[in-house]
Image 1 (cartoon, rainbow, N blue to C red):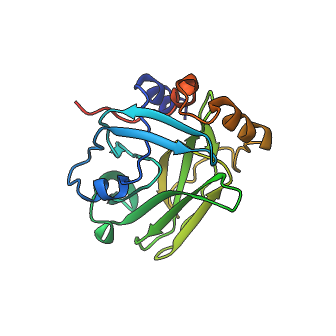
Image 2: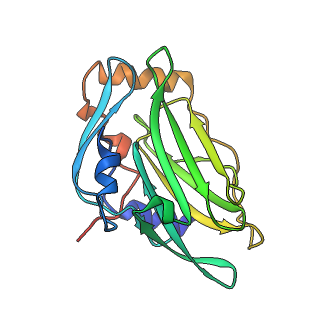
Length: 218
C-alpha cells in the first residue's frame, strides 16, 4: 500500500468533470482522457472548477474515474488471478463496467453514485481512494464486493472529485488486508466546501486535488 501511494503522489494531479463527458468518453477508442474543464457543483450556488490536461483512464492495475464518466475494463487472468487491466470503450463488451455520476436531492447538495457491473464469473473485490473538495489527502473508502453478473451501487452524501479503484481481486485469491469502512466526511466539512467557494469557481481550493493523480499522457 505504501508503494502504491508513493507512486500515486509522484504524478501530477489530473481530475475532471464535464456535463458532456460521457459522450466524449464514448467516442474515445484509446486509453486517453482528452483535456477538458472540471466543473463540479457543490450545491446550488457553489462549484469547483479546474482545467484538466490529457490523462489515462487505466494505468497498470488501477482505474482512475471522474464524475460523469462511464467506461469498462477488460481483465486478463493468470492462474485465476487478475494479472492486468485494459481500458474498454465498449462497455457492453467489458468484463467490468464503471459509471460514476453526480446527483442531488431536493436541497440541491451534490451526492455521488458509483455503479459497478461485474460480468466475470467470480465475485470481484476492490479497494478505493477518493479525493474531495477541501481535502488535503486521499481518503480510503469502502466498496462492497460485486457478485458475478450483478450491479452494485455505492453512494456518498458529498462531492467527490475523483476515485482511484485498485487492488482488484477475484474471490478465492489472496485476501487483501487493510482498514475497512468508509472514512466519514462530516457535515461540517461539507458545509466548509460551500463556504470556501462562496458561490464561484474557487482556485483557492487547488489543494483539494493535489493528492489524486491521474496518469499523464505523453
